[in-house]
Image (cartoon, rainbow, N blue to C red; front, side, top):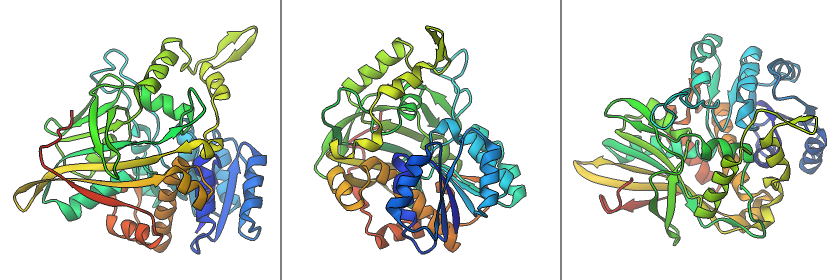
Length: 410
């Protein structure tokens, strides 16, 4: 498979290191707006026969299509901020090649009732193009990172192998990961952090077959994370699984909650109150500048924080349902230790944890184990070969049985 990787930041760097080491990767084009960063990564990988470097403006769908055609790629791998999803997605379609991303097209809150009704939902713009992708005979695989991504695969695995009937699917992201030495340092893009955390969270109501919204950081819940971590407070956050999972798995309720911590939440609320999350430019002494761009410029780059991260990141899918007529609850999860991950992979833990998933998916697409056309999420595919590859590559994943009814989602 020939791959055009757009974006070699925290996650893109991890993807490039892993994909370039796989036999299925015939050629890899590293494309970024920062040519020096792409060249530095190329030198590190050190395989000039298979690696090429290009400068690209991810806002330009035509440039994406031209680059894909010139390098005769089979697939465009999108590893940049979600604000660039649509031009890259459209560029891949124009080039008639496959497409993979780790986040969906952006949402827009309901203009009159944002904390009860959905407006434009995550992924709506992409799913609206499903017929065009099917007509082209090409696949756009959405949301195949860690979460969304492996969390969706876990949901599909539970529905296929562990339950006769699924009632609820709840994704929980937490652990005891922390960054030492900074008052405010998100573990991934500040743009993504703001979009996820300050937009109205979405919840799936399967009884009424509808999505609805709520207040940011609502429904605080102590979730008992495994691996000896124990209860950690999680809150509602907007996330793709809630929009993806119900398209394939029948469930009465689907939620996503994130362990942000009260201090981090307070800082995000302050950022919002001051208008620093705004993307529309303001005039600063004759210079037009976006407040969010200023915030991004003064916030530490997550790719540089790997050695400051300590603790463990645990992301998993809590499934509630019935098996053989009895209630059953399980939590399927992946755990990564920050220092161990940096030592063994040379990647920042969140970048690696997110990045190994599209590499697994691309291998399945290259082998034909996963195939199809149209716009689909990870839960649309057979989870068994995916989890088998995790085992083959020694990527930790596990499951714990939970006592039915002992801990109720809020």
